[in-house]
Image 1 (cartoon, rainbow, N blue to C red):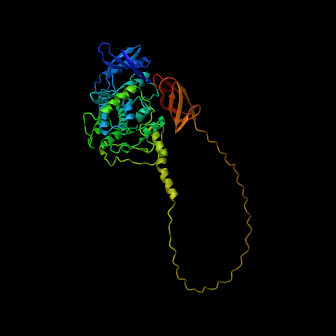
Image 2: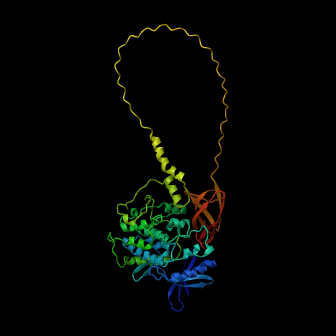
Image 3: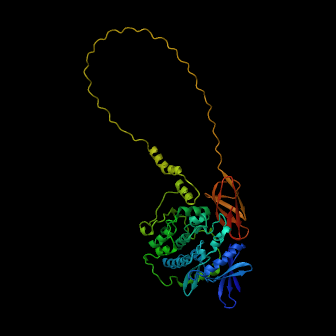
Amino acid sequence: MIESHLGEGGLAVVYKVRHARLGTLHAMKVLKIPHVSIQERLLQEGQVQARIQHPNIVSVTDVIDVDGAPGLIMEYIEGSNLDQLLADQRLSLEQVDHLAVGILEGVRAAHDLGLIHRDLKPANILLSVKDRQITPKITDFGLAKLMTGEGGGGSTRSGMTMGTPSYMPPEQIRSARDVDERADVFALGAILYELCTGQRAYGGDDVLKIFNDIAGGVRVPARELRPDLPARMQRAIDGALAVSLDDRLPDVATLLDVWTGEKTAGIKAVESPFASEVFTRVRQLGAAGSSLQKAEVTSQPTMDTSVVPVVPVSAPTSVDLLTDDTLAPRRSAPLGLLGRLGILLALGLVVLGAAGAGLLAGGGLLALVTLEGPPVVVVPDPVPEPAPEPVPEPVAPAPVPEPPPKPVRPKPVRPKPVRPAPTSTPVPAAATGKLVVIGGQATLSRDGRQYRTFDALEAGTYGYHVLPEQGEPMTGVVTIRPGRTIRLDCDPRLAICTEK
C-alpha cells in the first residue's frame, strides 16, 4: 500500500509503501523510463543489487511492475541525506571519521561484486537514524550504468556523459562508457573533501569551469579550510582526487587503508560520535525534504570561498612518500597560457605536436635572454708609449710627371624594375558552427560569457544548461565544430542531453 509520496526526480518517483501482509515499511522507486531495453537491464541490475547485503548500502528486496514501469522495492530510511546534513551542520573530526569509514566500506563491498556506482554524491548517501546511531547508506547503485547502456549492444548513446559535474573524474567527463572503479574513487575523494571542509572541492554555477578545474586539479587545499585536518585524511583526499589515473589511488580498499592509517591527532574510535540533538536534527531534515530527491547539480557551496585563494593541488604520485611538510599549502602563479593549455590537454580538447611543444618549452627562455641583451665588455684605456726620437729622412728626387689618364666612359646602368607593394590579405574570421537544442531553453557559457543565440558560435567547447518545460535542468558540455550544425536532443524524462 502506498502511504505517501516521498519525492520525484528526473529519473524516478519515490513512494513510502507498506507491505500488505507483513506490515513492514519500504521505499518504492518507480523509474520513469519508457525504453524497453533499459527496463530489461533494470531487472538484471535489481538481481545484482539484491545480492549486496551490507549495512552501508540501501538494500533492494524486489523489482516489480508498476503499471508497465519497473519499480525497485528498497529499504526505507528514516532520516535525511548527507547533502542536507552538510548544508545544516559542521561536523567534528570524529563525526567525519565515523561517516567516512561507513561510506568507504559500503562502496568497497559493491566493488567486490563488480558493481560501479558512477554517480556517488552526498545526495545519494542516506543517513539512517536507529538505536542512537547514524549509519550512512548508499543508494542508486547501477542507475548510471543503466543509462549509459553498457552491456546493451547498440543501445549506447553517443556523446552521453552520466554523473554529477562536481564529483566526476576527467575520464568520465570525456566518456562514461569506459570508466572503472577509479571513477568511484575520485567521487569518494570529493565527498571526503566535503565532509571535512563543508564545501565542494569543485563547485559553482559554471559547468564548464567545474570541468576545467577538475581537469587541472584546481581546488582549495583541504587543510587551508580546516587546519586541524590529520595528515592521513589529507593524504586520502589528495590520492583519491588525482587527475591522472596512474597517480590516483587504485581502489577503494587502498583509499580506506590510507584514510584509517595512523590514527593520530587525538581522534578516538567511539561507538557514537553524535550527540542526541544531531539525531533529532537528522530526523527533522528528513521530514522537511525527502532524502531520496535528486539534488541540484549546480547548487552553491555551503561555505563562502570568496576570501580563499584557489590554487592547483598536485596529486601525490606515491602516498607513502607524503609527509606533513609536503602537505603544506602551495601557492602558484595565476593560470596563464600554459595553464590553460594544460587544462585543455587534460580534457582531450587540444592536440599539441612536437614542434608546438618545443616552442612552448623554449620560446619563453629565449625571449628572456634576448631581453637581457649582450654582456658589456669594459676595456681599460691604453697606456701611451714614449714618442721615439726623430730620425732625419733622406731627400727624395723630384717626381717625373705622368701623362694624364684616358677618360673612362661610364657603363650604362639599367634601372631595376619597381615591384608594386604587396596587398595585405584579409584575415578570415574565426571558424564558427551552429547549435540546435531540442527539448528546452538552453544557455551556453564559455570563459565567463553566456550565449542564448547559437547560429554563429566560435568553434570550441561550451557548458550548457537546458531548462525544460517540465522536469529538472540538464547540464553538460558540448563541442562546436567549424562549419557544422550540432544537434543537442534533451529528454526531460531521462534528465539527459545527447549530442548528435
